[in-house]
Length: 605
Image (spheres, rainbow, N blue to C red):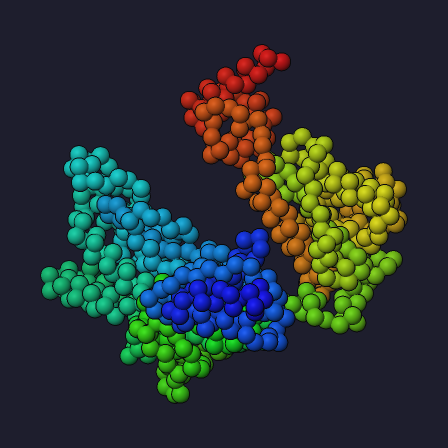
């Protein structure tokens, strides 16, 4: 869209706060932005000269503009973050954080269970989190169980079922890990009291939990129950020890969010510390890719809104390293100069700096940004270790992939001068192999790859890595021999778990030095072929590309098919099973349906 074209529609854009959306001629959403005054903000794109090429390119691509009016700048800010997160437009800041974080769920049921989950279901249950580490969540749940006995069974503990004495206490009761609500040995009120203590522990409010146990200890002592009083005293001791091990900033601080940023070129890194009751309960760092001419303030403001939303923060104070115009007037923005809050900000800066340095180390190991001499050094090293006739500046790696023992596919990645050459990556749908046979699959795809290389006179890889053991390597070598490529390239097998290399015909494996850049490069290539193959496989499954005979059976659904394939690995093996063997996996009714289908097909043939 040109400036002249925009002037014709400028009067139709309101002067109120809201969000604007830019679309290209094909209707693809290019960019989402917010504004205090929509007409002025949108007009700025067409009234100035941009030094940034990407911004200029964006303006040239704009074909249609849409806008949504909201009541305040805060509403515009929240809506902008929501739309960017949902649609991820090409020219918006891209927060590179696609993980699914774990929650602790308090299940909506009689005598609620507490457990870890990664899926939030709208079933009325209470979800606490998300948390950045599943391991820490499991440790936390284990820690909680030492102090608050809660049930772990899935029994339907309705009052009617308990009164009818349908259930009996299990080993957990005898171990002291449960108070036996299934037999009516624990009241709903007492169980609810335990849950409230759990919530306090999860929110970092250990003071109220300790006070609760102190009162309980005094009550036991007053009733001369000294053994119970001693057990409660030990609980208090453990809780106080846990509190001292936690990162306590100050018992005088309430709930605070702390953010710091490190920006360079088109990348920014933001660290987030969530502080509750003076304790750091979450710490997380994310990389963000900037697309236009976003300032540090714009990037930080976007990250604050996104991360506070993702981690369900309700803190009304945010600590930052410089002044920002944050649209939520209920949130106090603090720039600390000294004291505990400054220590928090310094800690956040330390975390974001460490994160950036670690990324840099990984990139240097991956050879991005290195000089030709540095790249060659790693390749010369690999040549020396493997005793290759030439420097392996062209490496190809193969890997097979399948889903629950079915639907085989293969992938090949190519590295040139130690870097990925993605234009040369290849996917393979297996054509000639029936069922799951890794060896035959590897033979097929290696043959197909290098037959085409020869036919089209393409450059031959100087090193071919077969991701698998000796079996896959032997299968690949059959194709290499059939194509007459023996002696023209080097082929090695890479053991799945041990990172051992095998040469054809060798009885002993070879290991690259554990601290060598050569091994790091081989790992990089292996990880890349895994990623590429799994992504291909996942996309095919999601598009419904894979089909098998079981999908034609009326009364047999996707879940049942997956159960069968997971157990028996292929349709061929499923056909060979008796009705009793099938029933053990999917039940009698479905086993009968399946057996009748197979019998009818056999009759037709």
